[in-house]
Image (cartoon, rainbow, N blue to C red; front, side, top):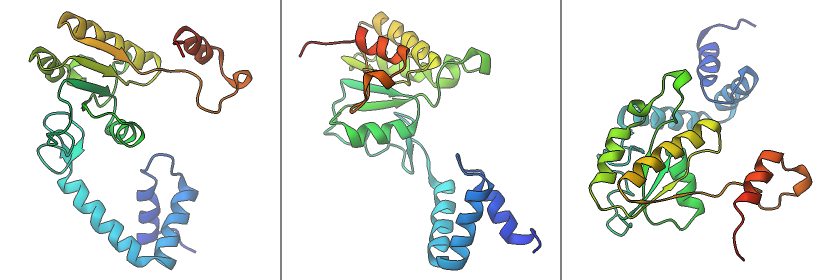
Amino acid sequence: MHNQGLVKELIQSLCCLPGVGTKSAQRMAFHLLQRNRDGGQQLSQILGQAMLEVGFCQQCRTLTEHNLCEICSNSLRDTDTLCIVESPADVWVIDQATNFKGKYFVLHGRLSPLDGIGPDQLGFDQLEQRLRNGELKEIILATNSTVEGQATAHFISEVATKHQIRCTRIAHGIPMGGELEFIDSSTLSHAFNGRREL
């Protein structure tokens, strides 16, 4: 069988997705072509439309097809609390898993001088403008628990302190259902130091 033509192109195109290797892409392509052409057509249509129409919210920088996303345009959300995250996926996860009713700001990354990512690349000028306007009472730092994520959180907390805004960090530590003997020492140390009253 010749590995050429549209089938090969479809498989190679599916490989652009994170975590999808050649074998997975091959399974997806053959499934769509053999068993679910209607699903493939719908996927193709929605994907094309999303690529053309989805951009970034002018206020929080998450993904949306409008000037303001649903969260920023919702007048029932608290305007005095801002949760700062690294990616639009984090907004999605936090909003589904918690009862957070404030607003968000998406950095689209984290400080990483070795990769040439500084404050300018993360929209810090826009963030500082929001901190300066006097509306915020608290910012919640929900960056990842990596070295870069921690450095980013520290940098933002210093800016927040300058504007006299309360700054909190989401807790990191032992996951629900986790057993101490299987937790790495860094996570355990962080959880131990971040203990709270019951």
